[in-house]
Length: 239
Image (cartoon, rainbow, N blue to C red; front, side):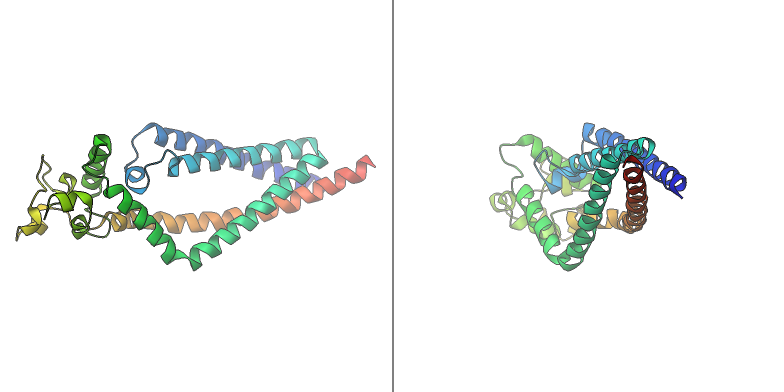
């Protein structure tokens, strides 16, 4: 049984290590390119790809600890590994519960953050203005909830009945100015809000993510069990 635990723990963590490497590589590639969602969701450097990169590094370290602990049957390393895995499992359960309980509040926080970004359109930061235009045009959306949001942003107040140029289906300079009074507005601009465009775009991924989390939780429980078994046997032999 001890050999089986050792082999199972090594194989599981070798796969975990591989996943960690893959996540780090993918996150690094995404960070090196323009991030459409990142422009709309936050202005800070600490965006979604950075979080994914950190998560990948954590997974990589956990996989390394598990592999080394299984090979060397190092009791201290295996116990450290088991504690980390247990803490991660608890954190995942708590996070899952919080997401279910505070879904609406989370949506409001994201929307308010997006409002802050859109409100800076047309300001001194010309690169941000261009990024917002590009993101809206690529996602085929306008505003956060819908195109009427532009009435409440600084740009819409300074330019009544106007939306950003990125909302126009045929984008050109100042194409969004005064367009809200046009009776054929729906044929000229995108009307869906960017929050819902992003949400629809990643909704399919959420189901896949849920399945992965469940599988990961099962793997974690198996890993904790194997690690504790090997650590106990290792301690017994060292006495």
